[in-house]
Image (cartoon, rainbow, N blue to C red; front, top):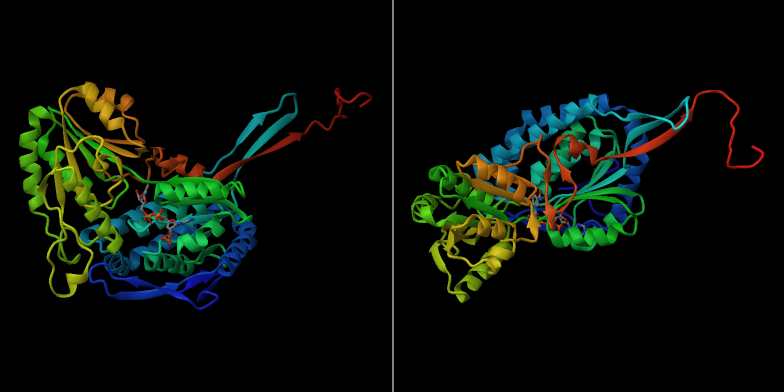
Length: 488
Ligand code: NAP
């Protein structure tokens, strides 16, 4: 694959590449450019040079190009699904679901083309007005993760471009091919030269340089909290605005009056969707003592039915890379040290044929996990879930809120009073009541505490890509009287 800089598909300036492996087989899938700081400079220069004309084009025409991109993605969607399966190990149905999500984002944001408004505010004396224009930030750096590599690219590119920014996209080094495919669709749809640039390479090598570049106006990143903290340190140098969608540790509450089968189905989704590699994954289950046994019977039976293997034929595919499997093993060795009760899974499954070198891990359930265990404090980001029994409401609220992260949370109950109370007391950016996720384009996806800053989706997400410029106008034509300067 290649970088896309200033309207050209190019290799990195020193010709170096990085290997991308297929997570199902461990085999080489492709090589992608190991970009240099020279490549970064050229991409950012191109974005800056093209930005004024792109903004001047107007939002309706920009929206048309974004919609056209959506049409092209739709027409070739099978190709994107196959890349997601090969590159990311997505199972078939989830690859298709992710492409649905991409189209939803692209069309949703394109609809804002005629909805960008500013304000006209009365001046402090007559015949004066203040025009408050919403304008783009200029050059946007979009840094995306590997777990939803297509949806996250779409969720950043569509609003950034619609609002008139130019973009340099640096995707995760685990999923460069998905990003390249989507950028090609923007190019086919007629995105002008320089407005959208793609560079690949290790964030640990070029990330600091990109985000602190003096020509950058906004950095939007979805990824880990540690990377987000580093970006904030680096953007102190250029004062670029940041949109940071970071880690999660969702509590999943099953109250005594919950519809248990629905709760179990939703938990299967919330934990094993994408093999648990989701920022809104349920990572801490709090189940009421009155229904715990019944719930566990249903949930463990469902868990035992999850087939792990080839993503084209299974319910759960591989993890993204070998490092992710090692992380699961490390959580399990801590669980064993703590002598926790592993009631399902817990190890690398036996695979045969081409899958034997793939990055698989069993769906795993651990019972009676203490609140202070690393399993309940650190983001697992894989198919391991811990269960904790609760019997009173105050303890439930206290434990659910006890996390450095604050993205998603789940509550299953038929008690509407509890729903209203939880809406106020659960301190997370999203609460899913009696339903699974994921977030919708028209919702504002935002996290509290160490989950980051700002958010994406909805009119509030669009506004993140705009800043306000104030123009003060006197239209009286009268001689100016400036009382504070004597004689004038
Ligand atoms: P990550 O390692 O933090 O990487 C995210 C992106 O940042 C990648 O493109 C990465 O490039 C780049 N990067 C790495 N170091 C950088 C640096 N110093 N400066 C600038 N960019 C740098 O995260 P990940 O492993 O891809 O994704 C998993 C994490 O994302 C989890 O914590 C998950 O919870 C979170 N997530 C959050 C949301 C949300 O909406 N809140 C959604 C999805 C995922 P390289 O790949 O080259 O290192």
